[in-house]
Length: 442
Image 1 (cartoon, rainbow, N blue to C red):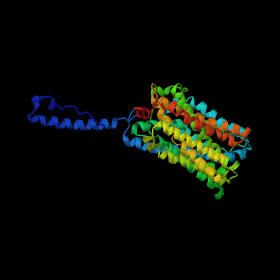
Image 2 (image 1 turned 180 degrees about the horizontal axis):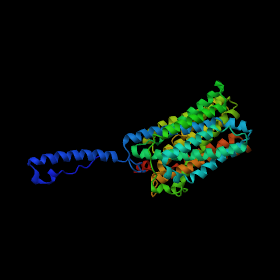
Image 3 (image 1 turned 60 degrees about the vertical axis):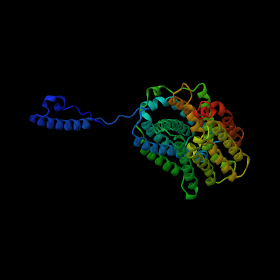
């Protein structure tokens, strides 16, 4: 903080210069300045929360970046905990594929309801306060998955889980885009890598439970409690950002070029959500794998996605968005085809890993493209694509479940192959607005 020092009487009045009595006023003036400066510092209010678009001190956003990595990790671990226990939930409530799909659909409905007000919630509370609140609710919902005895209780929990998880996702992605702007270098892939790493750790811990003799409900309580503690601790170090004026408007569906980017994000996250919700059940039901080996299906997917995202920022700096999206879609399609067509558990794990590697940079590439669409502000573009994509992530798995109920889970997961191929074929049209592609054409 800089304090403006006013001129003393001896500075402003030349007639006093050189006279003996002038020494006392000059000394008195310095004492007054010191007292006034001290009083000013004491009365100085604490720095207000910066608005989106303002730049806080570098150490502040660096600390916030590490806190945000912890939030993404917690989000991934909570999703993994739900994914690992899908077979447990199915057995606890005695559900078929259709009833299980409807429970997942309740999560999608909760996400849809909350996303309609996500912009206003971020603007009113700021990402930090919103993440602390809804992230804790999400962790408690996961911990309570086996608490109700009736199916209607599960539906209510899934509604809360979907609503809180989607708001948590929007809040941490809003701060992630702001921190990336402040740092002036690509960080989005690294943030999302922590989500994948959290998923890998959550699934890995879940795979150890049968060997350790730990009951599923105990694991859910421990995971939920750890999630609440980590989310609250990380929220305290996030930037106290306040929403800008444009973020006070309710979220609207994207149109024009943004609609295609949002569609690809939705398809990519449907495929990602399918791995979260159905990979463990596929390994157990279609490949007759043990509970521990089945959980490794989720872990292999998450590990490969984490590796792809940790190196994603470097890859994006060397490969233009369109060829990167094409290769990513084809790798994901090939991996899913391998897992579905070869009836060997080990090959299934390899296939899931290829799906994770292929999908690893889809969301970062599409978010970057959304921020570059002409005539659309970066904040609005990212928010719109994030909302549509997350809705796909929540609504896609129930669709796969309905197909599995009337055919087979193998047929349901075949949608992942179709969506990945569509992403590869549509990359040229969707990403022609990006700076990387514009530069490559000149």
